[in-house]
Image (cartoon, rainbow, N blue to C red; front, top):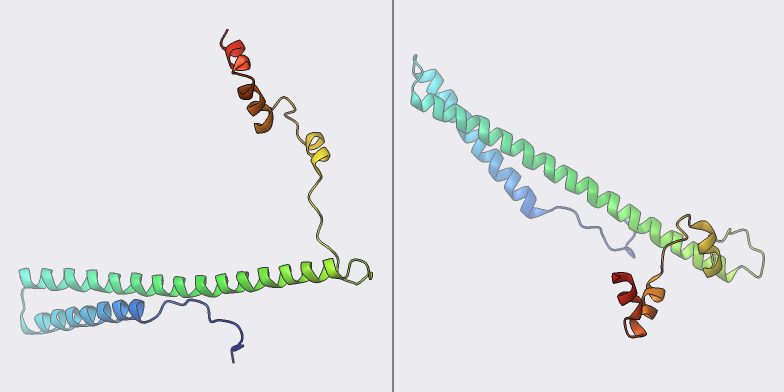
Length: 149
C-alpha cells in the first residue's frame, strides 16, 4: 500500500483512457463492418477498401494511443522516484551538515571550489569576467573606444 504521507505522482488517467477506449470502439466497429462486407459479397468494392482503410487506421491509432498512455504512466512513475531520491539526498545532506562536528558516519557532499580556485581550473585564462567588462563601461566608454581603433 502507498505511503499516505507522500502525494501520489501524476499518472495519465481518465482522459487518456477515454481516447484509447474510444479509438478501440471505432476500430472494433470497422473490423465488424469489414467482416460483414467480406462475408456478404464475393467481389471487392469501394466499400471494402473504405472499411479496410478505416480498420487499419483506427487500429493503428488505438495502438499508438495505448503505447503513449503506457509511456506516460512509466515516465510519471520514474519522475516520482527521481523526486523522492532528490528529497532523500537533500535530507541526507542536511543531516550530514548537522552531524559534521560530531563525526557521524554520513559523508558530506564535496563543496564547490572557492573563488580563488576557479582561475586555476580554467584553461582559458584570457577570458574577461562580466564584472571586468562592466568596469570598462563605467569609465566613460574609453575602453570601448580603444577597441574600435
